[in-house]
Length: 212
Image (tube, rainbow, N blue to C red; front, side, top):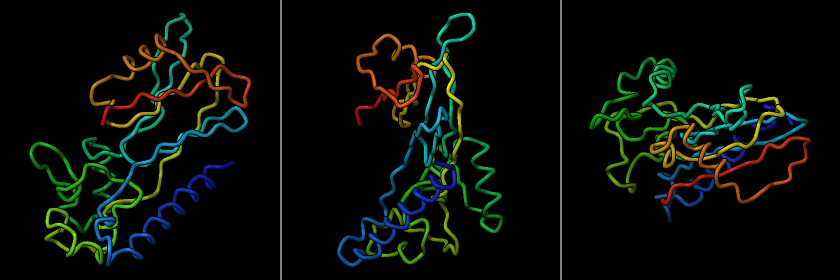
């Protein structure tokens, strides 16, 4: 298990999704406007790999040296509301002055979408899918010649420690309402399921999901 192997799996998923869009373009053009985010955690030989594509987040709950439960964010969301993500996108598209636009006080890629990376969203990656019959709200007035979004995930590794207790995997629907610390405290107080992992550690995965 290596970061390269994980990356290849994500890119293979992307290729499969785009192939589906191509095959069904005539009958289901709306597939071109569909694009899920993806957050994956893999434990291999006491190393936790967190792979993120989109605006989900993984947060570790661990015990500090003074015995308190603390939160540690393990990955960064690919959301252009983050100044660093905006600058990353601008650097990747130096010839596109409209790559990020402020619309209704919200930063968006070309004024449409907040995430800078996803699986799918073919209408913002390939110009041949950014035309009728997809709805006008998805069609861009200014053409593009290279993908506006990326399917290349960010991958971080974390060496599991005895103080690590659990990891929360959640989408932006949760993080819009809870801080990292609030989330880990909720999990700590309401642990109901234990997952037996193939490592000598007390680390458990936890999932807090929004109602949507």
